[in-house]
Length: 437
Image (tube, rainbow, N blue to C red):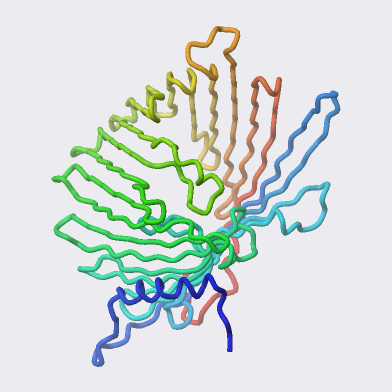
């Protein structure tokens, strides 16, 4: 008999309750089976070499050359058309450490998605999960149903992936998690959702958040979102948020507004949970953007942060041009002062060549109304060329320069090769060809 870990046994009741909320799905006896699509696949690989030089306090220099290989692939239409497999991650190595080093490898996604019947999906593997009050990279399983009245009903359980996204799977004993979400259509353009989650770390309950959210269309040109989350374990409101977006006909102007009230992210299993006098953080943001068909326009943004008696305010302005964006921002408050001027430019020189540049100059101080001697400057420059050699083969070359109080001159050269290949649907399954086409 297989004995489950203690954490897994404690999660079983939660998983059963979430699963019970899912509607039963069974195809009608007389309904014809859909014709399965042919299998298809795609694959992309980005290989990047990053060269830079460092200098220690004694003046000795060291040259570094690092390599990063980012990969992503998808195979769909398998197992009669209902199975899709996705994988994405990264390998990294350096000349001074020859050979493959598992410690520098990352697995961002490794997911098998099986469609069962109409609207029911069973997913297993590593996946980024955003489900109401829960947001994490999960090593586990998720069952989801999508319908008409029930826009979404899902249940999931497993372990949180390691913080460094290593290939090793997350441990139920170290970081177990489970939860579910139900979203209903409450009217035309209105959706209401409810969600719950359960997290453990090292055998201790970390958090038990529950929450509700709603989205609605306000007329033809406006949308609104509101959500709230309460942590049953910490007995406090985790997050209260409201957002609105207005985009009148024609789309030349767009207005965003957001207000947020949240508690600092400290779970009950953390050593820092003993500090109970942490103050809530309140944020307010508004942004207005206007751009005409000739791509001339402007942006205005305000961001305010309020933590107890401490405040921090930032105002930004930007001019939009057909090939450039030039802006200025000013931040003042208890977190220090900051003034920034920046610019971005891009030019499609040839159908196969795109040139881009970025520059910024920032003056900052660590406290408010600091004397000139305590102000620091930070300058960044970057130039980039994107070259499309042929379909599926692209090269990126970039030079970066940084000048700040820590480094008199920091120049880095980045060269990357993007390789993509794939094949369309086939009556006979995955095809062997299609490289660089």
